[in-house]
Structure formats: C-alpha cells, structure tokens
Image (spheres, rainbow, N blue to C red):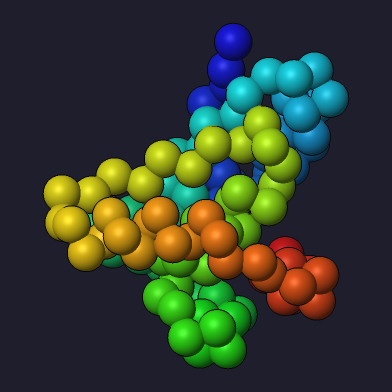
Length: 109
C-alpha cells in the first residue's frame, strides 16, 4: 500500500501530518513535485534561499538537497526523481548519501 501526494521542502508541507501517519502505519509515501516544488510549471528545480545555502555548504545541487531532505522524512518516504540524463541520474543516486545536519533540516522547514 502507498499514498501519493504533493510534498516537498517548501511545497505541499500541509501534508506533514499525513506523512507522519503513513510512517506510523508502515505505509509508503510517494511525494510528487518533491524536487520541482513551486518551479514545477517551468519544469525546473525550485531554488529557495535555504536550499541554495545548504547546497553551497555541501558542494551539491539544489536537487540533491531536496532529494536528501525528502529521504530524511522517514524510511517509508520514497524519492522518485525522474530523469533521462545520465549525469542527473548519478546526481540523484549520490543524493541518497547526503547527510543533512539537524540544523540544516530545521532551516529547510
């Protein structure tokens, strides 16, 4: 069983309680627009100031920060970034190893 809904650092956070409830019930949560956020209409990655600051601190892309944040929400939260670019695929996989500090997670919301 899985629940799919919009969710991301600065987009769709009204679903925080739903994400927690899914985790408590061992239900997978699959966020959409987790990377694009508010930039979904332009087909890009939303680049909020907090995301950019964390990306610069780690020497990674904003998309990698967004993937790492998404994965930090719990083992039941699945990040499914789509790509047709091999370089982006490598970046997406590397984001799975990016460890954000408690302060960084708090700063991202």
